[in-house]
Amino acid sequence: MIFTNPLALYLLPLALIPLFLSGQKQDGFPSLAGIEIDRLSQAIDIGLRLLGVLAITGLILGVAGISLRERSIDRFGQGAHIVLLIDRSSSMDDTFAGRQPSGAEESKSAAAKRLLKEFVKERANDRFGIAAFSTAPIHIAPITDHKDLVLGAIDAIDRRGLSFTDIGRGLGMGLDMMAADVSQASRAIVLVSDGAGVIGRRVQESLRTEFARLPVHLYWLYLRTEGTNGIFEVPPPGAEDTPQVLPERHLNKFFESLKVPYRAFEAESPEAVKTAITEIGKLEQTPIVYSERIPQYDLSRWAYALAALALGGLLAAKLCERSLGRSQDGTHAA
Image 1 (spheres, rainbow, N blue to C red):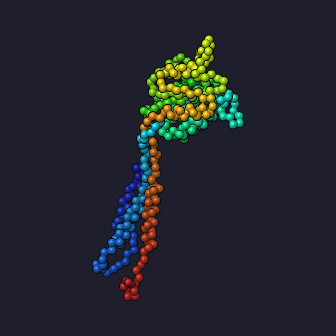
Image 2: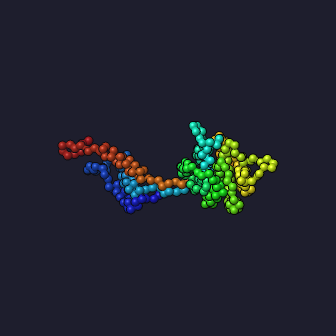
Image 3: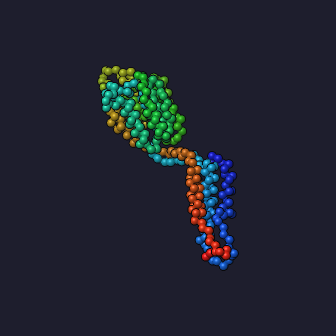
């Protein structure tokens, strides 16, 4: 426990006053020696004195600002630490049919944001980090267990991006976020993109080195636009097969060459995106130990409530007091 005003604790000895001084009205009697001991009266007297102790103690603890200290509790669950790496190139603002959304149609970015938010809400024990990229990567939220922060970060990815898609630097930022996470939980990067840029040789080698150093699972959720090349599409004999012509195919081949747990999903509709996200959730269900932060909790309200109850009991006892009547000769009436 902690106290915001600890000097008030020096007043705690005052709580002993009711044990020595009684607040009850006193009446004189010649002698009680011949009267049998009244156990009920003794119990009531002790109870009233204890109520006085509680009343003073509660008031002093309330003034002292008694609180429970902020702390962390280790808990066990199923899940992972996941970085959501989201493409914000301008093509993400088109529908899966490759046109501007109209009416009930939903853009690829809107569908991805909606379904990713559902995914975050369903994952009770996961920690998430958020990054976005188009021409350059943007660090939006660090890996955290604060779901409100994560959901807000996903909502914040609403600015229209540029046409260029720098996936290499985006993955580099995702790996940097993973490197900053010192936990022993399963780690995964979920790349959400509708296209593939060409990753230069130097960036490829840098990514190979980082993936070899970090135990990271990689998932690519490819939001395929109608009429575009697929991830697994093999060109016909004689056709040009280069990263410039078939960037999606060659990016997939690069990911497969990283020698890390990797899975690619091709989605051509919001329903397919949901299915892919659900599958990723099933794959990332490893036992983890996570820390739950318990914020500081103010107990002064309960201290004041205890004092109020004790004072209420004393007030009720005071209202029940009655003076003994006296006869004309000055003796106590029966």
